[in-house]
Length: 163
Image (cartoon, rainbow, N blue to C red):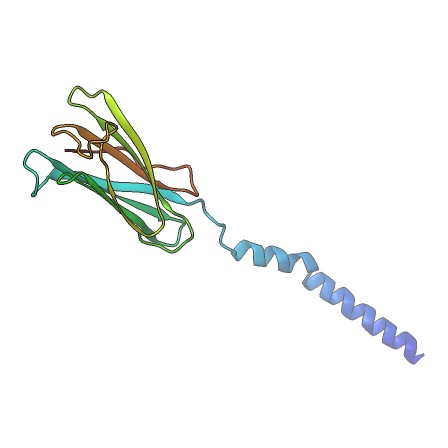
């Protein structure tokens, strides 16, 4: 008799628990409160200005930013210095990715004269030079660059400077 009462009480408890809190309800409630991972949004912010060190030259800069729904992250800063035709690159976040900078050099008639791709893991400085090996970009030539990382297909828009 005790065995029957114990089984009846156990069955009643199981039925009550099953009615008030089905096992799948807990998972649904938990999942409904979990944030959905959002895609990373990348963008570039840049500009150019007359070079204070090179009359007629134009310095240009570009910053790469990312947001994955938890705030903005400044990934990198890149700057073309007209004086000496130097490109400086700074990777501002230790995420294992490297900054990639695509560079194009155009003559005064906007004919493409040189292309380069630089990859920088931390802080880098590049003397751009020219395809003829002279190490100097002629005055008035346009230097365009865009920025991204080696782990994503996104690149910023092109920004213009001039030697």
